[in-house]
Image (cartoon, rainbow, N blue to C red):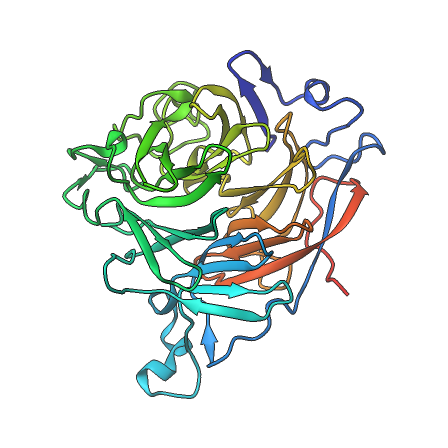
Length: 420
């Protein structure tokens, strides 16, 4: 199904001519299932590294891998959910039933070559470890931030890289008394206090990103709330927040998204509020905020003060899980491309950042290197290599080595070749 792009001033329709008009000068565009329209269409090329990372020690295995980040030293950090997401035969050591295996600690740090450097995480003194950790990001000061999307997870944690607790923002269980909205199908709630306009607590945070220039943290808030919230990095004080189209967030339950619903109706993806989850909110070099409105199959773009700029829709038949899971910006000075993880189609979409048009994509559903089972999170190092994690039964992290720019010959590239 074709992607389409809309702003408050214009709409980019599905026709090729209109899409091309929205692209940067001299660049062509492909529609789904099409062929190259111009040899000048270039996109980053990747090869999967099938042996990354190196085997873990101590018979450790990963549970559902729910976050990835790259720090200033190009070390790769992941977070996973451990024993609670492992099959009983994946943790026989815990029941004295065999020599393999047991869950690795929740937080793992790897060198670029895949060597495990540090590991820590889990319940401790002075803080509330999330019931269901979700997302990990290392800020520009070297601190590690973690969110959570479990029932009582209305807080954020900050640690040193050695796992020493620094701060907790928000109180665990602040929204535990909320009651599920009947028939919502998305874990949305009614009858609670504060909610998406609470200045002190969160509602199941998906991801945390940073703006070094303003010393601010952007919170994708998230699986229960329906907003982007902005904090002071040092104090954790909430400075501002907004919902879809820059509206004041509204927690009124909405029906399950139906891609066939008419625009403007409650079941439509063109609604005036985010649906759960708000899954990412990342700031670009030119000071725009790109927000993953996952279940609405759309990415919305804002100024840093929450003014709506434009939006685009992708894979609009993704149904209940949505298509826009996470993004990473390319490492050229202009951040020309966005790499978007789509955990339903199980591929990485390569997006022209200025037009928001999809140029090509790679990956496929499957268990082999370069394929995905619910690709969840994505990050990029300073050399342009990509790292992805997979949730549900995916339970792994993969590395995709950047091989430079290459002509685009088709929209769906399929499983990338292995790096040699």
